[in-house]
Length: 468
Image 1 (tube, rainbow, N blue to C red):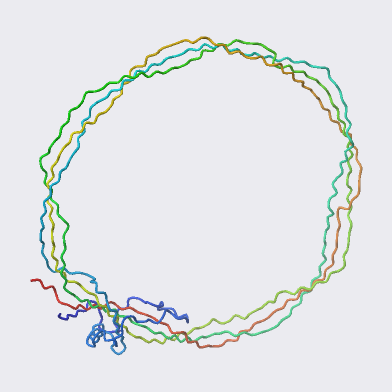
Image 2: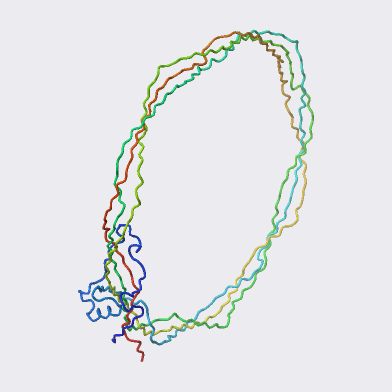
């Protein structure tokens, strides 16, 4: 196989490699924290002799990297082709003949049975005489009666309210201060040394072409031919008729009424007057006020410590980056198949014989004639009732008269108490004044790792299609 090398995307020098993206870290922040992880190269090392020295030197030269500080890693590759290239081929036809009978059923519609329905409606009339009660009410009023009731004396006493205590403090306040002074350390300047290890990853792809022969059976092509149609006929039978009577009986009741009078209710009224006398004595409250002076109370209150801090100067950070670079070439093989395709084309020819079979589809129809009406009167019937017993209601009519006899008395109670409380209060305020002590520190951040991936470098290896 002849070796052919072509650079599709590349660069002339390592300093001009196009950088596509940061794999670790954000490339801009210096916050004193580790950004990402150190890039660990995958694949096989060059010491394993997966690639020859000449191939390694060629890859480094085509990528434009610095050979003295470049690590070549072989990533391997799948034997499966990533794409295929059609070269040449031919087509061969395989013929097959078939015969197919296509039957069709045709239904002949005919009336084979007829059902005749004769509706008959017969009406039965039943005369009925119904007795109806007619009740009446009568009222009777007796002589008036008088009654007097005297209730026990009822006392209405004013509610005694709870004693209202007025607590009147007499406060004397003394204020004092306790002052102390302290200092605190503040970092005013910080020199930050930031080690940075930058890894430039250059992906290299070797595209290797290889010949391949395949035989494909194409999808079968079908051809259809139609023969003349054949028909199988049948004979239609005569219609059979069946007569059925549908009898409906309706009973109608004709009512007439006869009135039977009676006394249904007798109301007896008894009027009476009841007089109720209620004696009431009201007891009225007379409130009084008393005054109490308590002993003097002495209090001492210590307020929370108040700290007055001198404002610290703003921190100044000076970042000093120390950058080291290394280049890794990741070599990967991909395969492209050059296909020689032979196609087999199956052809199936089908002859279709249409056949029509006639089938009798018999149906039954129903004919309903006009209704025939008949009337018949039944013997008369009487519905009698029972006269209920007279209901007697004894209704007393009572008039109640209510009278009150009122009187008033007085009673004494303490309703307000004024309490005087002398208070002497001492308030102590602790105060702490904090002064600034500025200093400078030097910090070395953990190493920062950056990974930059360059554009893909492609090498084509192989020969073009060779079709005789």
